[in-house]
Amino acid sequence: MSVMHAELTKFRSIPSTAWSLLSAATLIVGFGIVYAMVRVTRPPADPSGFDAVGVSLSGVQLAQLAVGVLGVLVITSEYATGLIRTTFAAVPRRTPVFWGKAAVLAAATFALSVPAAFAAFFVGQSVLSAEHLDTSLGQPGVARAVVGGALYLTLVALLGLGLGTIVRRTAGGVSAVFGMLLGPQIVTGFLPTALADDVYRWLPSPAGLAITSAHPDSTLLSPWTGVAVMSIYVVAALALGAWCLRRRDA
Image 1: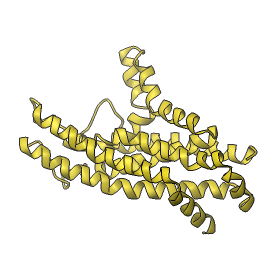
Image 2 (image 1 turned 30 degrees about the vertical axis):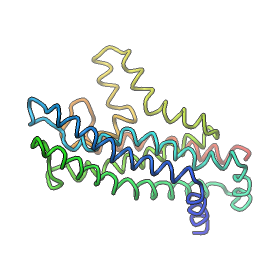
Image 3 (image 1 turned 135 degrees about the vertical axis):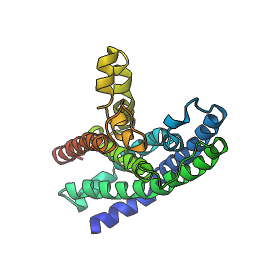
């Protein structure tokens, strides 16, 4: 518990964490509202296939970059200031520090993302109601999609922590997060269409974002399968990060 308390104190004392969380919340709510307003001005020809939840949660795709950077900063900021040496002197085993950081990061990201996702949903639906495109929280898959947006962002934050621990430099860690989330999608664009469609759904970001859709999408994995695939990427990054933390000098 002392390790957890120490990591929580450090997490709260770093200004960049507050800014990253605030940026994520702003992107979730702000972009969701803006995109809903755009869709109202351009209503679909066939409303039956309209994903009102996906429109409200469109900001999650931008917020993933903010929480990914946050995950990187949680560990690389200590390497940059040299505080990591003091931390490891106090906790020589190192891995409790790493898992303490992961627990605090996950809890903080999820705690902020849930209310932001619900705010984006309710305000976005009120905007969409002008063209009768809105849906309700009680509809099948809607609540799961809203909470799933927060779950996805939590996984991205942990992915950032894992990659940041492996690289140990802020610039390199941020580049790794962006590359992991966006790079593979760019590469698949150069593949033959049939192969690209098959590969796309298994990539980290599309797999994880499948849970934010309340409508079945043939181009994506099923919601919980997508979360499972995204979790595999995250666990691999965290496991490699923990191994690097034990093996390298501070």
